[in-house]
Image (cartoon, rainbow, N blue to C red; front, top):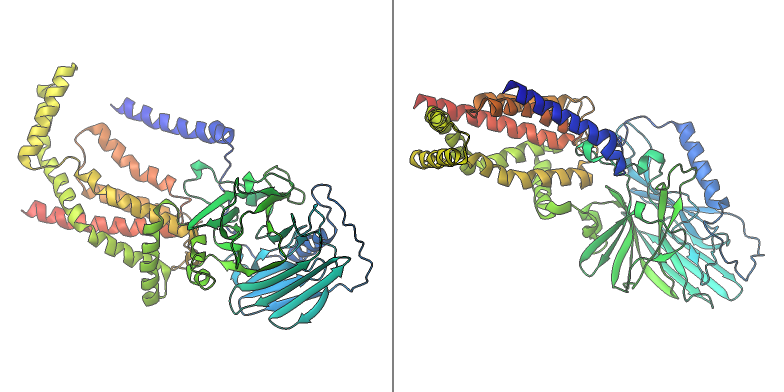
Length: 545
């Protein structure tokens, strides 16, 4: 039996090794990606990055040969940048092209220890607000007049030949930027207005997809193009957009209410006052890209003589999104356990309002959940203790029907179930209690990967971000230890091989959870402690009786 158990362990190790070394890479999977590394931003490197990005935005050649406008801009207009700002965002405009060149979220930092703010628009060869005329002629080098500029409003205007373009931007008090776009001229039909071109600054590792063997790790910067059609949110991974020129998104026209680009926690989305029927997408390679997938998506809507709507540059937070429109909160995607994740979030938010700490809110809510499950867990624990008491009779049945033939095995199973029925034992009770816990686990997992409120939220001591893994690995070890202690108090199966397998489970779970979000492991630890206490009390009462 010991040789069989050792062989099973070696087979498991060999399976994981083969998956990680050969099968994983063959499926296009990569190693785990660090999540928002907690390092201090280097000012010199940051300034250099911004200057390079600015130069790229002005000087870079288009991705594909483009038609040249019939008009030549001969009017001399001085280059000028204008900034609109409120306590939450800073928007930098450029009169070269009359575009949004950069958007900074002042309340969100790139990491817990960094002073650098999140940017959801960065300088690239494309920019929100750029016009692509019919035939593909771009207006990126048109110099616009600044007709009006104040703290919250900016007006660009330019006439070139028969084409006149006017853009009015109004910044609200939160994360919204309203635009009124007007164009007159012969090159409108078939043109596009760019509304989004990627999010945060990206480098090579930001495009890596976590391996299936990374057990819950995620890359929060991975982007997707999102849109909303008649009550349904849809998305397309940025890595799947490979066309270098604008191509239609949908096979047929729909009523698209909002659209843009988002990652795990932030969004750059545009909601026109009137739904549009189609979108156009292209992807541009990252500067000095080393791999094909290192590309940034660009989203554009059909050009019209008058376009009015609102940009949202900010966190994927339901309260903020609802201030834009009732359907905007659907930008937040909680995954397959979405409904349950929303319920958990509302309960956590209420407890956070009382405690002021998201970690303690998780602990308290988990305790409430475990108490609510008591009517299911108590019969399961009782059944386990009865099974231990029944073990000598089960061993006698195994000796009675020790033959290896099918008839002996069937008779043994029949008498075992008859014995369970006589003693009032449900052998599957331990499995039944797992049924409600699985969706709760999945809901917590999805919530921690998408809820902006839990991003960089502290608990205590060294845990300063519940949405990422514990880099010290102390929490996973505590989780494994509590699982082991709980097992010591529970009756074990009579089969020695099963007992050894159960003893091995805490170690296996610890390894699987090393990359899981700290908040999820905190939920598991709290649940284990609750289970440990409950089992010890019931064991004392059962043995006393």
